[in-house]
Image (cartoon, rainbow, N blue to C red; front, side, top):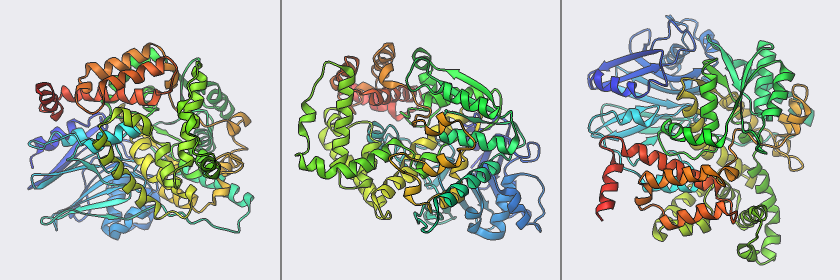
Length: 624
């Protein structure tokens, strides 16, 4: 391994760390770091060596309880104030026990010079990304796939299972990637590779649902309030300016309120708005900001603006992504980075407190299942066609509700709920044999997930925590923020906070058809009533509306002009029919059409990459 190779890898990640660069080369091993300086700005240069010189570490992330850990390591001769040095000192003293003691987010690599062993560790919830590729008898790792593609001689071929993931879910399901030769280290896992033998992977944390009985509502609410204040206060550790994303909902409002309680009035918060849309939360966010005395920065986003920037947003991701909030998060991060270097976000609140609409609807589907079956499956819904766009959209919701009610359990309902391409549309778009192969893969994952959950709502919650969150929600947050050298922290996803939240009974989370009951009650003294009782929206785009206008033309062009339409994944004629059906109001295909456009943007970028397998595949398809 040579420094030019490691340097080339780090150069691909300069947006993640514009402040500093460092390298270590030790024979056939080498690693490097691009640093975004947040804690001990002057003294935290990486890689960092242990006091005895045996270990060296690079780490992307923040250990928010590192000062507490230092007190337990008071005999260690620290040479800096860096939280990464604290993590290494903990590993030298406690071994792998350090990973459960460290609180925060991290993708860490530790090189043991004595045993010539590499250890990779990823935080319990998967907040920070960590990709690996094992080829030519070696291993490469990095925070983003482009760093792996800088290694000479490595090959990267598109994985058809990853493509199917994308068109069904809008993202690739971890630990898969869009490339066959690349996978992610799963959340809460360690990967260890010695001088001989295969790499071994072990799990050090997993979510465990263990509801506690015998506590009053008031006790749970008081503890929720205290826990939120505690985790937010921990996550505010920084030697640089810090702000927050504010969507106008309970989760981000709770974060902003707790920050105000810790730091006082004047916290800077950032909101993305969609003028004229019914999902615009600008006014609700403004009310929260005024109530808390925050400095409020609002960024309006119009369809034309999003279309102009869509290729740049996709370029910030390693893989194709159709996350509904990717565009507003990218915009918001660019704006926030002009004011602060770190933001706190409300991600995770919906997962651990049952705040998603889909979780609430899953319960209703379960209860409605006997009625739907007794009515013969309500097959007539598929044949309904109205002259009204609104009525056709309502029919689509009714069909999805019916299909969900007929599924056997909570895990199946989870996968159906996060699917952007309904089975009937998949039948139209996919080659039959291809679809059947991928169908079996998804259900094998589903069965493994369900085995550890005691009830249907718990199965659904585990699906959100272990599948959707690391593969979609946290991926889009990390890439959108780090594209602008902005660190995004998620106080609700400290594993210690999650461990506690999973002891809360479901009745304290979902009550009378409303999610996040305990959290809503806990923030009553902090937030305006309108926000505490408002519906769940978050940073999402009004896709159904946008695809009826000029944005639709841009999206279709992004697909056809990229060459992706010739690659053999989707039927070209059916794609055009989907766009027509949506424009005419016959069906709501907004999320799928957005996915098709984003895949086109990604495919176009791959074609422009020298030596890309995409270029070769298109050449073969054209010759055929």
